[in-house]
Image (cartoon, rainbow, N blue to C red; front, side, top):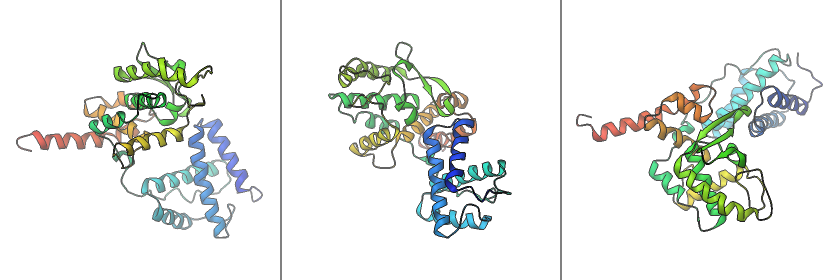
Length: 301
């Protein structure tokens, strides 16, 4: 039975603790879950309803249809996923007798995986920073590494200086769930990282020190939000005005590997996916590329 004395805030804090301690999720993932739940609680209050009231599927259908009107399908689906995870947790803790949201289906829509840059567009983006300036050279090294290794924005921002092994051409990454993986980054990224480390990083830090590979002008660790803003600004600078983000670079990394013959299992390891089904979502992009190549070059296409 639900605890009628338990407030929304107390329930949220218990859920946050579970995500952090038991599931070992990153802080940004936990924040996203809780933000989605806070929005739902606010909607309940606007209808003079409380968390402890009886809820059925029709209530959630109404809410989901409402947010679907104002959000992209993948955003609405993410919010639905947050609610499903929350109510599954409530059921497991006997805070709700039943899970009223378990059968609600996600929207069918354009997957975020459809946003992929061509090789030519990537080259254009990589050339955007002004490498005659310290911060521009830093940004070029960031973009090169993200595309060469498929790192998430949070992984890039939190990279330790000691994790970058230039001589071996690999970086030790701490990803989702605090899992570590080693990812190679190739000669081009190595060259730009060497330039950044030997000149710009030293100039930015001055007499200060930092354990992080990429640092701000104040010698602080960069943030995930900064990297998203950085990528979007450089995309806009070179005329790539469609949805462009660190995740698009990650999608492009995976798709270009598959287009050039990499096997799915290897791409899964490089991306740090725990489930190969997640990696398989990239294969339709590679397939579309191969189909277009076939149509363009085969005499009987």
